[in-house]
Every structure is written in structure tokens, then in C-alpha cells.
Length: 182
Image 1 (cartoon, one colour):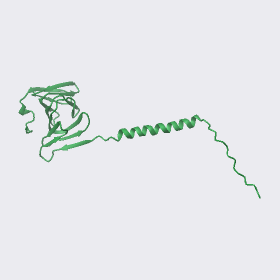
Image 2 (cartoon, helix red, strand yellow; image 1 turned 135 degrees about the horizontal axis):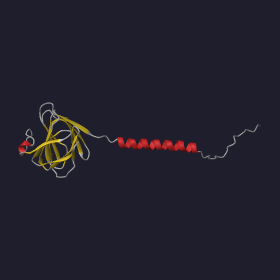
Image 3 (cartoon, rainbow, N blue to C red; image 1 turned 120 degrees about the horizontal axis):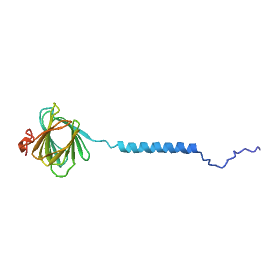
Image 4 (spheres, rainbow, N blue to C red; image 1 turned 180 degrees about the horizontal axis):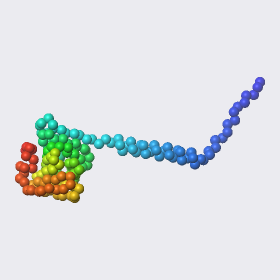
């Protein structure tokens, strides 16, 4: 009978290598960064578009506290968040904010940013680039290239992307003449 040869098993010996260590560390780092990016970008921003090209005005409750009314031929994009960000592309819009907390609404008209400090105001966007804002209650801050301006209650101001135009006092019925107040 012949003896079979069994393979000789050598004990495992770990040999440290800087090259292997750096490769594995790099792989773990890339996986971690990709995981964090996936988590961060997986939260889609919800943007809704409202368009009244059909010819009829539109009333929208953005939140239980914020109502928005659009006139005929108006287009806006609403992006949820804190504050709610709205971009006006054309037409007239009226906002009624029921609670008196500030900084819940940020509006963009071209390159101009408007922040709500008040509770009721309207914006008329014109194709000429001269826009109008009218405040029924509270205050609104307008950020232009030339600086920041405040428009107070019962005041109307015209503005463009560079400067603030004339400001006049108005009656409440002139805030948004196309809007029906209840």
C-alpha cells in the first residue's frame, strides 16, 4: 500500500503593506462619500408650477396659513421649504398670510428678491421690466442691486432689477384690483 501525500498546511501569517492599506482606505472613503451624496441628493425638492393662461384667475392655498391668488395670464413656480420660495414669471399675484410670523415666504421677480415681513401684498409683473408691489398689511423687503428697501402697508412702489422707482400711498382697493376680497 502506498502512502498518500497530504498537502502541508502552512500557518497564516499577516504581512502589513502600506500600499494595500491605502487602497482599502481609498475604497472605503469613496464608498462613504457616495453614500453621503446619495442620502443628500435623494431628497427631491418639490416644485409646483401654476399657470393661468386659460384665462381664469386661480386661488391656491400653499399652506394652511398662506393663500396665493393669480390673475389671468400669470405663471409662478412654488418650491417647498422654509421659507417657501416662489418665482414669478409673469402676470399678477396676491398673497394673504394669515399668521404674523416673518420670513415664511421668499419671492423672486427676475433678479429681484422680495421677503415677506407683512401679511398681505400683491405684485404686478410687467413686460417692460418695471414692476409694482402694493402692500395691504405689514411690510415687505425688496433686495435690488442698489440695496434693500422696505415697502409698508398701504404703499405702492415700482421697481426694476437695478433700482426702486416712485412710491405712493394707495387705498386698500388698489392693492390687487383684480382680486376679490372676501
